[in-house]
Image (cartoon, rainbow, N blue to C red; front, side, top):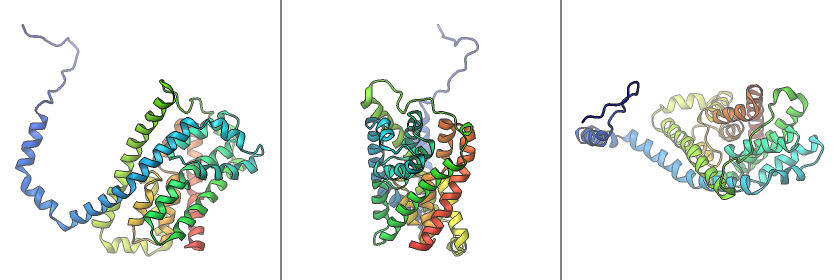
Length: 326
């Protein structure tokens, strides 16, 4: 007796033969695949890609573990009590707190929302939002490893990151309006099963999320190094203003986690140190994934105003810092 699917239901395709078809296709195309893998361009691409991935992945995983632990086990009320009551003083204090308490971009947004819910001035919460992923100890250590023999790059990233965090906070204090900000409604961790379940859930989410962007960033860096003609990159990198703006825009598009972006920046050797500093400073402040998270947490009106302002501040500060320190 045959079993017919109920009327109105779609029949799912049978995928059991898919592995066999893929294997057969690999056998048929093994000659072209081998020739492609032996090409110098692809070998160069693979070397750069694997180099960025192998260097950046340990810092990404360690940073995610540390930021998840802080987000879950350090209550936001602790930061709220530690910050000064006056917003003008709370902004730099929150900026330095972000430098001490590591947090990747994915964790800093909900923590900033929790601070606002607990009565912290939004200007101070946004200073923490910017500084936590930009200048924490894991990020600075990764930058030192990615730029060996260049401690000035670490110092420039620290100085620029703190300046951007304070500037963004004070700018919101001066020009921000209460109607632009939708009060965050969700808690930082709303999962069931206790803190350890929330911790591992945050780790799994952030590793998969940030790891995907690291793969994209490593692939883009490898493509720039191996595929794009050297004269094209040289023409862009040779114009200081254009090179700084180009790498700042690239940081926004790639959306690499701050624990691993230094290794991508270090591979862009055609560009000046100031341009690579702009890549390191702009990315943790504003990129595509952050814009989406800002809109989801604080409202679309906030994101539409915060994104261009934060980008402009980060770009200007990184250019000035690079001109002075690099």
